[in-house]
Image 1 (cartoon, rainbow, N blue to C red):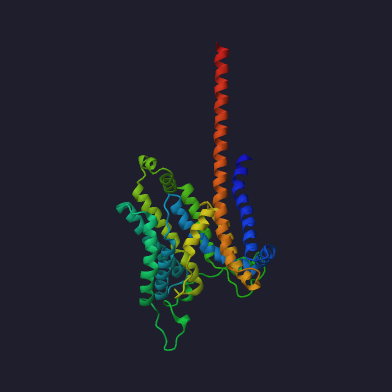
Image 2 (spheres, helix red, strand yellow):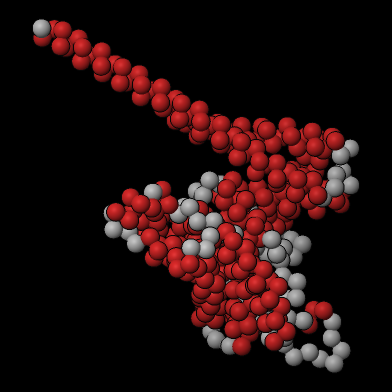
Amino acid sequence: MRRIAFSLAAPVGAFVLTVIISTIALWIFGSDPFEAYGDMLGHARKLETQVDILNRATPFYLSAVAAAIGFRMNLFNIGVEGQYLIAFLVAAQVGGLISLPTVLHILIIMIVAMITGALYAGIAGVLKTTRGVNEVVSTIMLNAIAVGGLIAWLQREWQAPLPEQFSSSDLGTNPIDDSGLMPTINGLLEIFTREVGQGKELTGMLLIAVLVGIGYHVLLNRTRFGFDLRASGINPFAARAGGVPPKRMVVAAMMLSGAVAGLIGVVELADRGKFPPDPIQGLGFAGIAVALLGRNHPGGMVFSALLFAFLDVSSGVLDTTGVASREIATIMQGIVLLTAVVAYGVASRVKERDEARTAAEALAADASASTETVGASA
């Protein structure tokens, strides 16, 4: 019961703090917090809104897993943003140039995205192991190189042929054939619910995200590689003494993180069918927040991804009803993360003190028992 209490204390405390601080923030900005919460929850009860939340949570979760792989080895892969964007562009270009049966076409696009992301992330791993460059610095620089350099250049080089009279919708890479687009899974959802309206479609990449989460759990907790990765993160010197090659693990962890990051852009690619001139950005940095809030646990990151997606989607209804500014949802995301960090820190300290007190009591009891035994023998 004590272990369960410590496990629940942090998330419950974070939730309570979030509600209190968010309510104060809404009042400060002149909004009625109860009306705002009512609009957000009422909007979320609609099936179509739930589809939007799941579609938004899918890239958040993939981004969180990519960041968490590095975190479990004490590597801060801040470059998920650049990795998924460059992988998105390369996969879109390759997918638009080939025409294959559906399963093979989709598989090749996903493999290309993962390889591209892995190679780009691997640069930071190599720089760290060969030159001692901190991965935070290198991945931030690689983000800038990807977004402001490579992507800007490759977008122009890989621009699809334009008609004489063209609009912004014609810009981008060659459109991918329908055989290369991940099918939606509305049919699977409608088995358990009603028909989804308003033209909403649940992305098939949701199933890929589920598989990635399962694979992440199995890899870290049921394989030798996962054990070596976690051991290297906890104590690299002990891991090296146990025969784990530290440099190889750094590069492998970074490349694995980049491979998962490469799948993030495939979510948008399945929806838009090409790399557009205005791809969704910021998913890499949002994934870091989702991973931290979910404590790098595959289940915890599910709830944090859904929470961030809910707040993202709710920002639209707040703007529509005029109850509050849509920016309040972004503020609430920051409040959630801040309160979670505080709550987890407090809970961790209380748990450590409780364990230390329990251990001291057990040692005192053993010492007392030993003294009585010696006295009886004498």
